Length: 192
Image 1 (cartoon, rainbow, N blue to C red):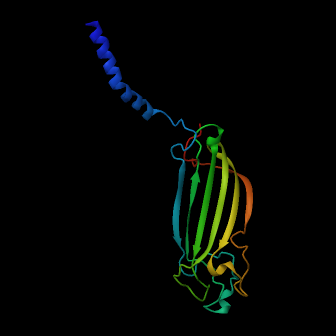
Image 2: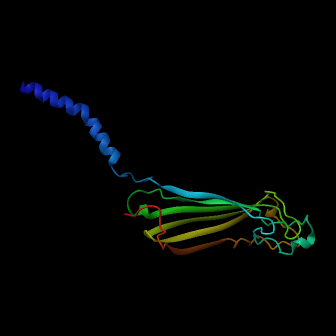
Image 3: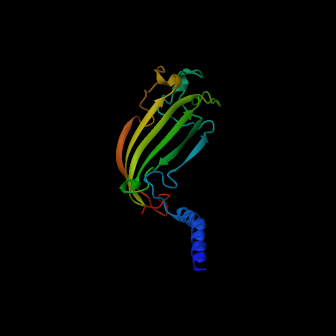
């Protein structure tokens, strides 16, 4: 009888062992080095500017309308689309506090102030912000940011007398800085 109990106990352990191990795995925290939960986050958006209120991208003189409705410099946007993406690929070690981000904004339109207000969605420029940051705490991080503007289509070249050049949208630059979150707004995940 004792031998039967030992065999029965061994059979139960053999059959329930994988279930218990599976339950432990399901509740165990991330233990890998890469790709913790919520390692990618962000948003996308789309905005439309009403007529007589187009964003000035700093490429053309505000008085470009003196050249008429077909002025070659019509870099006043009607539509802005873009977003923000943040990637935090490390789950453990001090690297878990490192994240990378991108914030592209695509400007579309073909408008000449006080002369021509169209619904055109011609590509004008891609305003690209890329960066890397280190979370010092849940509400404070230090970062390096690279900002670049890519002029698209006909805006890649010279646009005539009303052209201010390609330095618009704050131009191209690199910055090093810090960001402090306050008022209940902070990082969307916990730093341990």
